[in-house]
Amino acid sequence: MFTAVIALGITSGSIRRVSVPDGRITTVFDRAGAFPDGVVLLDGVVCWTTMGVPTRAAATTGESGLDYSRPNGGLHAVGLDGADARDVVPSGSITTGKQLASDGSGTLYWSDREGCRVSRVHVDGSGLTDLVVNTRDSSWLRECVGVAVDAGYLYWTQKGPAKGGRGRIFRAGLEIPAGESAERRSDVELLWDGLPEPIDLEIRDGWLYWTDRGAEPDGNTLNRAPVPAPGEKGAAPQILAGGFREAIGLAVDDDVVYVSDLGGRIRAVPLDGGEPRMFADLHEPVSGIAGIRG
Figure 1 (cartoon, rainbow, N blue to C red):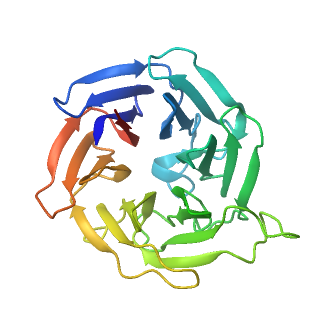
Figure 2: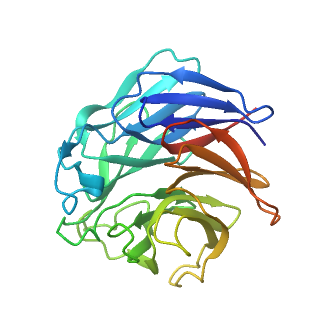
């Protein structure tokens, strides 16, 4: 079971640690950069993405009137003790770093929203590779946000327009088929379509879990569904909890799922159907979260 949860504070640009037994909040690192978003723990090291510094734009051209299309996002790492901070990839190698995932063997995967792609790199910064590349257009349907890896497969969300009800979840192999490219892959499967606005993903014990920040009643929810067999579509999702204030991050423990939102809260949702409870309030928008074991 988790002993603590790592959380990213967007406004302060900080990495927080929240103790599971008593809810005590401490700061791991207070220089996480501009708009930290996705986070994982890998052998005692906190790895996270940043979205970078946006410019002001018309609300129709950027989320909440912010334009993140400049390539100034990043991927970073620091010890759990706050020491040895470093960049995993140079600043600007990512347009807008979103959710981050790991295969547990030293490789990191992330979605790049305005870059409309999913990429990977080794934790030492080597082997930077694009796995999925979409052509950006004005539909807001091509942007990649959530990402998960499991059993040789890559899963990712394309959330669609804000509150648009056109979100999708895809799957492809972890390796690009021979003779093909990240721009054109024959193995991409569309698993779910017409979701409110799916954000972060996690796979646990044959289930795919995801947060959704779309319009209610099906949005601002925590969802799960069985991982589809190869070639099959996803089943109708089960809504485990709702009423979040722009649900973003999730961390799945043995019997509970922790969910963060832009209202600054982290809620604990029991998997046995019990009532969700407040786990922590960071008093600032919270993006990615990850659990610490031991």
